[in-house]
Image (cartoon, rainbow, N blue to C red):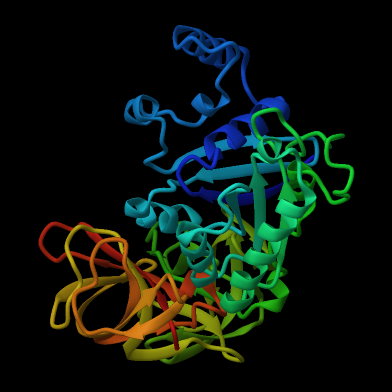
Length: 416
């Protein structure tokens, strides 16, 4: 049996109990090995605790354990009878906003934790704004520490209404709010008897049933070329295949395609998956395409359907998150990487910066500092094939890299 896979990221403010929640989820779903649990119990006993501190299951770095905070993205893999999961446990501190961007960039769901006593705070708005910018499809709002307010329905409703206002202002439409106590396990895996007024799913029930993925048939076909396959052997003297991972959509033998930025057109005459000929393939499969015509393609060129091809441009407006201590300023020369394609670029201008109090982009032409979210305009050394990030995340995303040391400067999302 093949399980569906759900990638999701967790985010919360400091001391909201995020690590404890993740630990409880892993523990109560029977996803913790006996030796792991024994090690956690031993460390907890050394600290004078009466029971295992489940937060230690996720706070793996020594610095995290010493400080009692999460400062890096930790990936956890677990499964239940219904679904497999990849969990990106991201930091809550404002100075680690870039880590959340990294962790949530490939997820379908963001789990945002709120302490019921504090309600929606600036970090909550920051996490919701990042989820909206990244195009995360589903939002699970977990209102934690309900045991500390005597499982008050009124307190829960206040927090739920406050977040709903934030979600509405950001355009987040698929949100589910769940009251829990991570410390004792209420509504994490098992339904709680302490909140009879709540009739919705537990957190695990929700994670196991939320819709996963999209139908490739509903998306335009995109294949960024990673490798031009020309073995030049006696058996295959004229073989020329174009290999890569399908970013979106479906391709079939007989389909008409166009190659960007060349503009050359051809027809698919063959498709191979792991060396086996097939009649069709779909995202996210890795394939080799055979074409009717000889086209001099390079790594980074994009093969797409003639019915819906990407935008070809050398000027891009994009929302970015600064991931490096090096600020981003107008006139800065960088390398831009769009999938397998790398091209020289210059930051023409910085036009705005996201204000997390008002959740609006305010005009700004200074330097974007680390963890800032803002808008820039890029001019590229040549045309690239891109899509609007809101339409296709894979071919609408890019990074900017320092020309000198190769360090990643920003993560970007195109706005075509």
